[in-house]
Image (cartoon, rainbow, N blue to C red):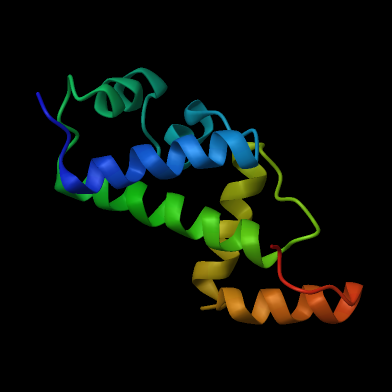
Length: 114
């Protein structure tokens, strides 16, 4: 079975997060309240996860990438519970990643990651 467009994006982002943050796919699955085995099967295209689950995974991976860029030179935690708290805070307080970026840059006097 071929991956949907949304799941293809999730796979690309999950692979990128694995390289940049050392974030295992298992932790992404846990953030989405999904079994790591089911998520793995979804990434392989052997299981269709459903549009709602795929959209949730897409939003999580996109937000993680945005936050990772925004907090540079700091790093995000890889622990799923700590990440969940950060994602929930950002969502609940409607925090834009640009605001995070500006705050971090003002604290450390850094420029954007190249």
